[in-house]
Image (cartoon, rainbow over all chains, first blue to last red):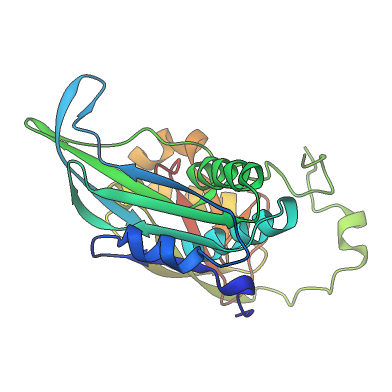
Length: 158
Length: 102
């Protein structure tokens, strides 16, 4: 595994996410801003009251994809440190499922990078949630990752 | 659709030994895990099998899987992979429903 640049954090956890600790971790004297995204469990889905959610992941690939997002952030934006943590297992209403914090010398880059990180995570990190209701459970509608349709020699991939 | 593997593709490729079998690890997630009845499998088949053909093997056993084919994405060794990717022994293939994390 390549050493992580900039003292970043990429984790899958089964315990509650300590958001304050992660924000402290990315904070450094040379920075001027941290932008954080706190994604948490909604109490309803398509107007049906949700009881709880259960998250599962293809863990090795999910971590690799989270690190890949981090590498893209450092490439694209003038930021300092990144923390991306996703929680797995059973989560109750209001509990944080994903937390992202980005520090930067100036706020614009931190806002842009944080937005890019959550949008990309939602499309490319192999995590799934099952929604539990009073009368049953369903796998949440997901997003299709931009996978190559055919090998590149046959068609242009982008 | 070509009737046989194209000569151009094969030009630089090593000639595969006749009737060699390979073993790969197969993972299913989310809804696909429930439909296939297992999270993980190990399977042996003829060399040069593609991911598409591998999925078809499972779809034949579990017809419910076939219905979701258009929304399934495949990965090979933790990287998204095209359906025509040829498998090698020791590969880890996963069939992934649309992701819904966050």
